[in-house]
Amino acid sequence: MPDPTPPHRPAILIVEDEPLLLMDAVDIVLDAGFKAYEATSAAQAIAILERADDIVLVFTDVQLAGGVDGLKLARMVRDRWPPIKLLVSSGRAVVREEDLPPAALFLPKPYRAGDVHRLLDRLLEIAR
Image 1: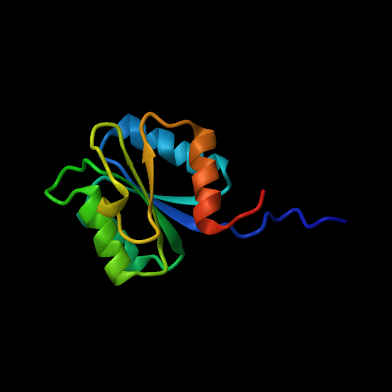
Image 2 (image 1 turned 180 degrees about the vertical axis):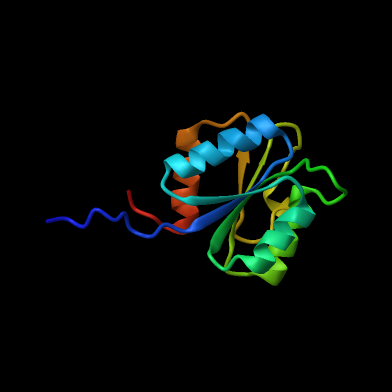
């Protein structure tokens, strides 16, 4: 008889200050079978990262309230938690590869669930 317990899926921290976009991103991540943490600012994201040990990826918007944008947050995460993967998104900012920390990927907005799933799988090397 197959084990009904789903395999452990890693946690993803979603950082987005627009409530509807945050809800949508959380739904996409949950639908893909991941655990989701939510933050609306870089400061809140750092606080979550300091206490949660199961986060393997940060999915952040570039434009964030609070003085630290998503690109700076991504660099902070890369410096402090090097194993954590990074997915950066924006609908307004022009983000070049050289703007991103090493091994981070950029996803332009608006995005579709399938695009997010594909990039999460690529970053986390998950086979579906």
